[in-house]
Structures are given as structure tokens and as C-alpha cells.
Length: 51
Image (cartoon, rainbow, N blue to C red; front, side, top):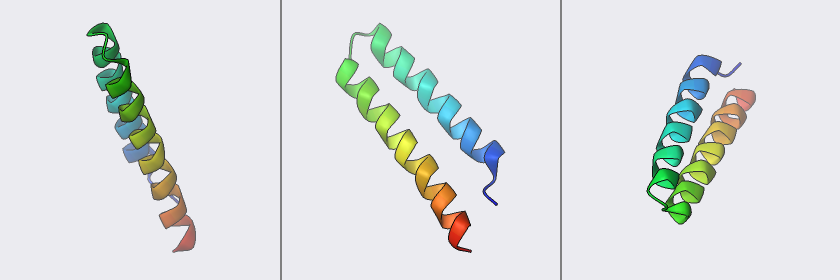
């Protein structure tokens, strides 16, 4: 079972970073931050699922 606390904090921090990028009107960076966080969370889930 994945460590959901670690995944949650990773997503929370990425959202915070993406919001900061959006406030700076850097929407491309915000998009990339969110995509990377989503992929990292999915990878963590899949890695735990195979163990």
C-alpha cells in the first residue's frame, strides 16, 4: 500500500508551486509542475502496487 501521506504532501507542495507560477502568469510552468506531480503520484502508486 502506498504511503498516502508522502503522496499527499508531494501533491500539496506541487499545487502550492503551481499556484505561485500562475500568480506570476507563468502558466506553462504551472502546467509542467502539475503534470510532473501527477506522474510522480501515479508512479508511487504503481510501484507500491507491484511490491
